[in-house]
Image (cartoon, rainbow, N blue to C red; front, side):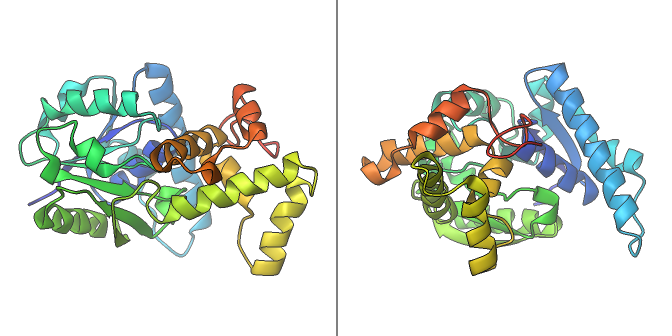
Length: 283
């Protein structure tokens, strides 16, 4: 199956990165969100990223940023997905929101269209159940920043077919990415481990064992990690971290996934990390 037109739903940090990566690899992209303001912000961010890349990659002939941007249609109109060969969904980590998105696109997208859920923790099998094409639903957990990360965690749902897996691998190859295939379980591999690490790091700050800076310094200096867990949390978004932990807590009914009260307080205060200008650090 030729993958030419790709719908990207959600123009937040992840959706914007996915749309940019797709446009840079020659795809026609339909980027959808609920408001023109969000879409304009995404457009500005993509242009800024493209200009930054062209300045700093002197050894590589960079394509004109305007030519890349012309491959992306910024819209609030879901009906444009009637020509999509593949859809990547990146909306907020709340089941009720995601479910409505899948109800909507299932009736618009062509029969051959594959749905990839870019989710941190929500079950791919559950997402498939919200459609009439569960065999064509797969998990695709991109890492941030998407254009710079070469590997994607791909998740097989209960009904995901081998054909869909093959199409997903081809799609990622077209984006210049490798993938690691895992089975469906809340949090999959990466976030089942990462969210616990981040949550415990927040507890360390709450309990005044160490400052955020010192927690991160230990992971970078002692273990050689490029970023500490709290810097990583700010990059992902503290609200996304909280929602993911809540999904894990609900799914496993295990107290080890209980979100740290400090994390909840920071999210309530609007301190969501890089995207809001402040989290554990100022930006």
